[in-house]
Image 1 (cartoon, rainbow, N blue to C red):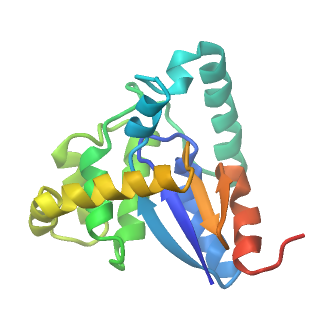
Image 2: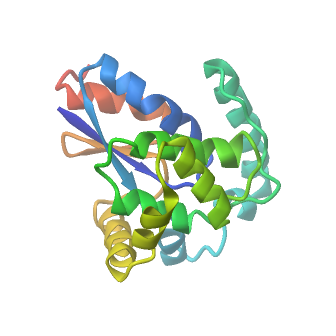
Length: 198
């Protein structure tokens, strides 16, 4: 049994989802398949050149307050990033190239914490290096692999796959052929993965 966790490093609600998905899935006996992708191309296809939370100020104000409540509820620190959205391209390439690495979940959580708990620029290679270090990895070979033609194509193909299966936002979960959108749909996705829909 498995659930696909589709995440974008600039995505606000992907932050709490990334911090809890592995623990929640383990409690249900479900494996997590980590799927980093980019929302930018998907938004562009809808005619957007920015996050909808920036394009629609009222929606953005609501989101930041709601995210505070979500993070408070599960005990996550939240510092509103001084730049939003941030460029998660390099981190996404790392995550795409090393999808099955045992250290990947720790790296993903470190990137989200850097962005949404520490207000660090995750688009800066030094920050990505530090997050790899937190995951117990030597950054040199990993960053070299992340810049390869193969990895760039991997992330491009992953984003196209997201579009093909109908993903329009992050976080999204896919289980049992069903798509679930949003941090608050994680439990429903896990029930689907277990074949225990209510």
